[in-house]
Length: 197
Image (cartoon, rainbow, N blue to C red; front, side, top):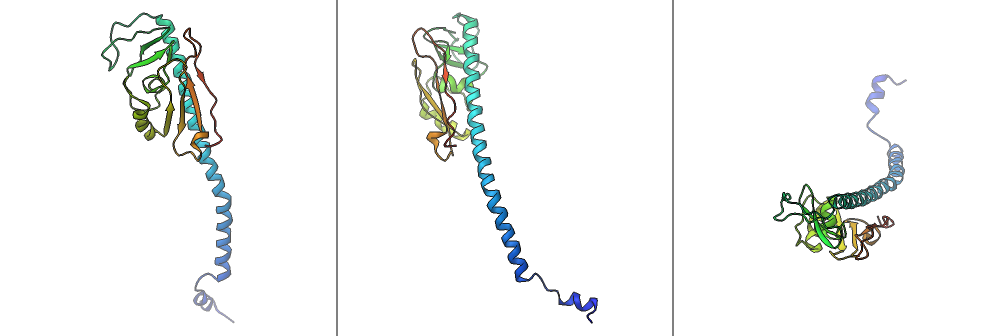
C-alpha cells in the first residue's frame, strides 16, 4: 500500500487532459464574452451620439428662448470673452451672450457652425471665436471624440455631427439645421443614425 508520504511525492503537476480541459473552457468563455464586449462598445458610441444630440437640442431651445425673452434688445454690459455686445436679433443674423461668450445665431437659433451650435451645446471644452471654421474646430472636436462637416452661418445650413472611431462613420451621425426661411422656422435636429456605430 501507498502511504500518504508516497502520494505527496508522486504529484508533480497537471496532466495533459486537465490542461486541455482548462484551455477548452477558456476558449468557450472567450467566444461568449467577446461579442458581448463588442456590443458594449457599440452601445457606448450610441449613448455618446445620443448625448451629443440631446445637448444640441437643449442648447438650441435655450438659445432660442433667451433670444425671444430679450426680444432683439442688444446687451449693454458686455459678454464674457467678447469685445462686442450681443445683438439678440430675433430675425436674420446676430449674436446672443452666454456665460462662455458670444454664440452666433440666425433667426433666433444658433448657426450650424463652430461659433454657433457647437459653442452653445458645449461639444468641446474649447470656445470657438466667430471666425473659426469647421476645419479648425474639427481638431479640437476630435479630442472630444466628435467629427463635424458641412454647416455654415446661413439660413438652412446643415451641420452633420458624428463620432470618431465608429466602424462606419457616415452611419453614426445626426444633423442640425437652424431655420429654413428668412421669416424663421424652428431648428431641426434629426434622429441619430446609429447603424454604423
